[in-house]
Image 1 (tube, rainbow, N blue to C red):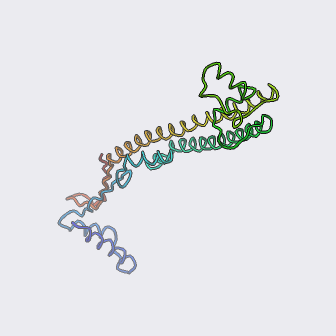
Image 2 (cartoon, rainbow, N blue to C red):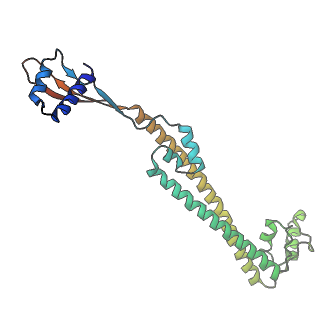
Image 3 (cartoon, rainbow, N blue to C red):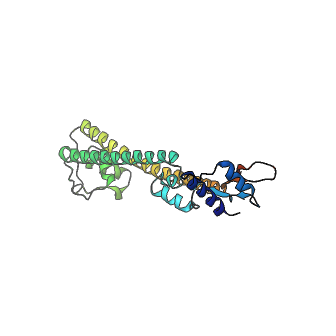
Length: 247
């Protein structure tokens, strides 16, 4: 029987309770017994899903490549993704700090060479030039060495690329400054590699988590609730409640 007769009966009971013509529960049961069939409320199916729809593994990978941890957030698993985001922030901070330090040291050694070795910083000198002036006392000793090695193409124009240290200590001090700048510059490459690796690992993890999310989504859990008044011959009217869980 449909739900409407039961609602009508229950509504009547509430209405009658507010009047002098109140019917007892026994009268309601008697009415149910006179019915030619059981009054059973239709089953109510409730489905519990992990999400509304499947998610894209490709999107999870792209999100993590752009910002590590975002792919995990997309897969509703940011409890692991947050560590990739934190690592990315630390690496970016390290990169900025090392870049600033390397540039600062570069400015220092160029200024030092200009003031003590008479090097003209005209912007036309390459990295090899600034490396060489830390190994040789002057442009003259450098050219003499290259002539002995018969590497004439590596010799400098002594006027355009002039330098001359007043002492070995000045040259060594310059060399230490140059080494500090170069070390920081080389370390930047490792940090950049760390940023790339962090994204790759996060993307792989995000793909795994999205796939796991979709797998759990397919394992839909259904709950079936069924209740109603049961009327059986020679037995009192009773309220039944059935709960079923299916996978």
